[in-house]
Length: 407
Image 1 (tube, rainbow, N blue to C red):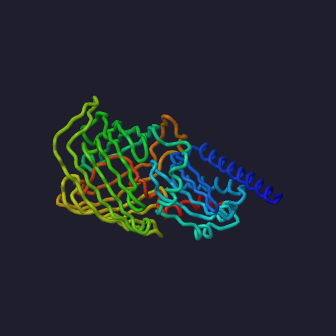
Image 2: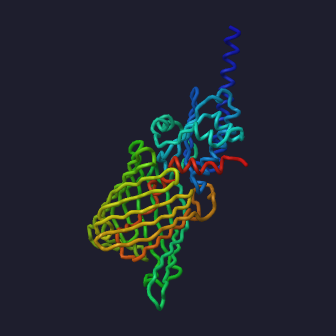
């Protein structure tokens, strides 16, 4: 009887200490500004989910979470041999999962184990469903919904126009209002304000995007994005895309369909509309060389100007930097060029709040050799499919090293 009483007391107070440490971990993550937090502890397993709207780079956000987990796990009795499962969300949608031994993680953070040894036992994967089921019914801490972000971006347009004035340009400031209303459902509005222009005759500020967007994950390897509203290039209507992944991010099949009319919101916020019923549809594949973080992308179909043909691109990702080269060939003609996307602004935004001003996370600059419009598209705003490369297992494996390895 005495042995039973001692065992009961050890179990009661031991579990109380473990859950106190779990609460402390959740408090630390919430204080940093991470959102949609949930945690579950079972014998031999700890499950945690979070969403990052604080750090610009997803690898840095994950490194912070892992560092905090290692700090609090070291004080949890009975968790040394546990497996840790970390699920990452974007707009409430599960993106990827990391599985690692807690003891191995603690050794890495403490500097007693190498990053190579830790990665060898860890598993970065798109197979999220099992972990998501464990966590989705647990009470959520610090939800990310119905808060407003107001990022300010810069758009730069240019052209080689002739011998008298060989270079013409246009600079637009583009403030945006965006809010995730519920899981995967986003409202956004972008306003464009020309501040310098010797490229064209359009100098009036106006709304260029006003839309609702729904991100979906149908099962482990299929992502869908659906948009309704006003898009760039004076398009009004519907735009949808679907990505099917194989072998995590190594191979992706892509499909896009758009049905739009000519329409925009003018300077006095009145809608302008012309019935056109213009279809755009194309599909293709993307192969990623995970060692060199390089994508080969092929698309074939009917594009924005209703021109039929294909486009091929080669894109290298270096953490947050993307450098690409492409060739377009359609009924309109041939075109070629390059594109660069670089991060801008601080590495950490303000903590999410009711209304949060911020700098847009990246600056994008394309170059078209002829500018004939072959195989171009219109832009409906940010979504999970456009941002998914930061969640690729190979991207996170590479990006985490510089944040988790102590010199």
